[in-house]
Image: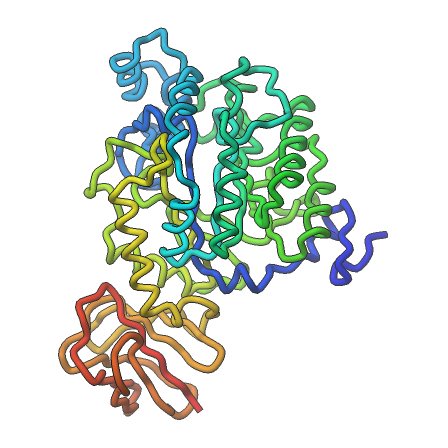
Length: 457
């Protein structure tokens, strides 16, 4: 019989494991940084056709805007990537041959500089792709891939270990991504439709043992606090034992929903949070979720993307506020170049985000959903609400007029005080006829969003 998970003892069965609770640190953090880095960072090319979910299925895979899917798209004869690769590298150049250039370029990488960029953005945690679908690992694994030649299996430099140390040195938590369902070194069949994704998941004893060994090695060597799996996991795997051991070592650890390959029901596995990709929920959800997306259309670095394909500063701030108001975290992706440098346009967005959070972070960090997520000002500007320990925050997703901020809402009590974050001095505030009017002591600077803090008694 399973022991009580609340006592800190998890047994290797899903009934016991499902007793795990989402830790407060994750709920408080709100912002994480996702990193897609690997061999695909060398060609760094994909067709920027649009965001995930906006391109029809019959066009998606042959025109995949995800540069980290370069190998799969390359295997689709006649695709833009197929033609680009042939023209740039020649038809005889194998994808895994990018390993030499990747290893050469990342010798210049500075993990501390990267970690500092993430810290300055306001992120509380980082998730690195330790192995993507191409099978190439970013650490020198002791687990031998039987389908890749020596020198083509892993990075020479321990990128996972060095970044883990740098991230923790900056006071952030470290999680690791692992592609536990797709590995094109085990199954080279190209995916051309969404229906084929499930058919190409590696449900074999060989791959199950391989993936289990990798997760155990990653835990032993780097001790991640988040196990972020992708595209399902082999049914033959010893996953319940891995997760139980993880939770027993880290009651404050988390796993995502992408270990699951079964439909909900008695045989389901477990997750601490769901992972909508390039999307978010319309309403407050009781279960924790994490929206993941790139700053552009791709997760991996795509040299074909420009400012036109990248979230604007205003859109980035509004995205974060919307996600947080509905009980979500934002896992914002950066795609480094092969040498580990974050492209300037992405670095600029991180810097802007950090500056906004330095002024308005009280409305984001450590908050929980309020009684409602959305509203608007008297002028029709969208508003998102969050709740702190002793105050409510209304984040106005636009620039209010010179007369101040007028919010339409029904307060469940008497207004005590209100202030605009980042504005000097006290604000004049009043509440009449379902309208909260806040006049800051000075004109508000131009900003994508302004956070109002108000107390109710």
